[in-house]
Amino acid sequence: MRNFIDMLNKAPRLKSTIKTKAKGNINVRPASEAMIELLTLLFLNSLAEEAKAKAFEEKSATIRAQHVRAVSKKVLKKARG
View (cartoon, rainbow, N blue to C red):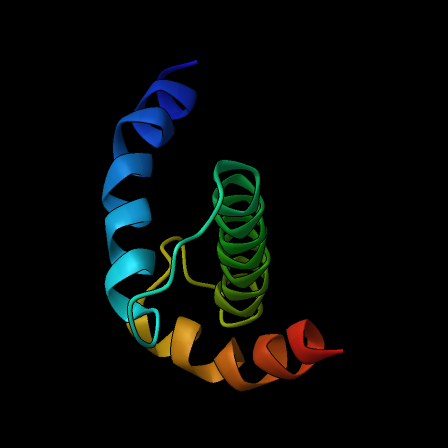
């Protein structure tokens, strides 16, 4: 339950990051904003799962930056389709 509350607190920061990364002055409707946020969270979740598996392969109890870097290319390719 605590992770869910933390996720809700971090969502507005994610929203502002997405708006600043958008090219130009684009108006995004609320439904589209919600879809973008959900897709971003799904991507981050899959990245975390792959990094967790990589850490487990290396017999590490914690996920480190090297594990995330090692799987990021694979997850990006999968996300593109």
